[in-house]
Length: 275
Image (cartoon, rainbow, N blue to C red; front, side):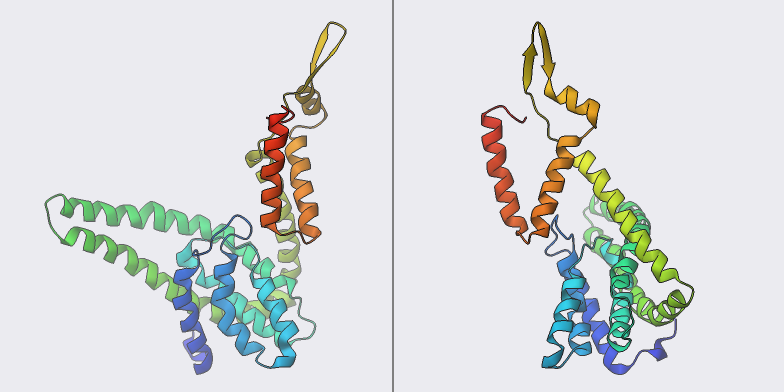
C-alpha cells in the first residue's frame, strides 16, 4: 500500500469516512440494507467532487446511486466504499465513465468479503475474545470484559482503517486496469445476473403465501393451491413480488406498499382467500 498517493485533502475525507463507518448499520432496513449508512459515509467525497450549485443534478444522482443496496461485514465496509469514492472521482472527471459500474463493483465485493468477514470477526475473533474474557470474568477479574472489548475492537478498528486506505489506493489503478481489460463490463453484467438470482431465491424462500380455496366438480374436490403448484411452484409469492415491483416502478413508496399489503392480508385472510 502506498499512502503517498493520497492527497492531504483526500486523507481528511477518508478519515471522515472512517468515523462515519461506525454508523453504517444505524438505519439498516429490508429495502436497501445499509445503503443509507454507505451513502452517509460517502457524502464528504460527493460534496467535494460536486461543490458548485450547478452540479446539483450530478450530486443528487451520485447520492441516489450510493443509496443502493449494501450489506457487508461492517469491519470490511471501508474497502468497497473507498473504492466507490475513487470511482466517483473518476466518474466526475471522465465523461464516458459508466456510472453503473460503481454499484456493480460494490455488489461484486459484498458477497466474498462478507463470507470472509463474518467467519473472521463473528466466528473467530469474537469467540476467542469472549473465551478469554469469560475465563477471567468467572474469577471476578475486572480484566475479563475489558480484554473482551479490547481484543475484538483492536482487530475491528484496525481492519476498518487499513481497508479504507487500501481500497482508495487500489481504486484508481484497479479502475484503469478494469476498464482496459473489459472487467468492468463483466462485473456490471455479473452483478445484474447475481441480483436477479438473489431476488428469485429470496422470493421462493422468504415469501410464504398460499390459498386454502377449494371447489367441487361432481364428487371431486379440487384444491386451488395444488393446481397452481402443478403450473409453477411459488406462483403466488412470485406474483405478489412482481406486483410490489410494479408499484415500486410506479414510484409508490415502500411504506405505502407495506401498509397496502397489511390491509390486503387482513381482508383476504378474513374471507379465507389466502392463508
